[in-house]
Image (cartoon, rainbow, N blue to C red; front, top):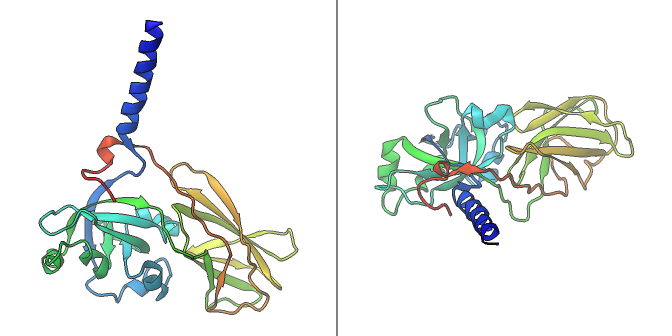
Length: 268
């Protein structure tokens, strides 16, 4: 009996120690710079255009190729925290990936608004004058209150032979990896392809109202989830218009990280 109790205590203690030694959001170390003005943001590689400001509330970021993921990382959210305690708060800033950063010296190039928001009170100018800073960051779920996944029909679509769609307000912590489209009432589903960034397109004659299926994949667990749009793209869809899919994507991908990848300070 004593042996059984000792074994049980060992197992519980080991499990508790293991849980205490891990976290569910891996923290990475790098550097960040910032855009000196907002001019580049609408021209980001995700293709959001001026909607990049609305999507991110001005807290936008260009990310390195490993985070951009050939466009799959567009719209992903990160918490970035400056490590210089002379100028920076412990909270950091939360940003949305809207562009690709090709300079591998920095994992992030932040909008000026996002960069400045990391500063302690009355330390903004000093932080801006640094230009670049050491940071730690982690990916976090995107949250858009009262927002469904939206699709925008791009201006270069040519009805009914060619259709390009841009996805907006993808919540949670996943990546869109497949999009399929079919005429309403048809089981003949066609695969769209990623044109670039957050834009998917198809060269196929499609008539009438259209239905969509979206597959999202978690970053680490590689679990696929299928979403079937509640709302169809109407028969009279128009270039430049935005349509509500009627669904919200809110899957959260949890990681199991060693203690040395959990960051030096508590995250909020």
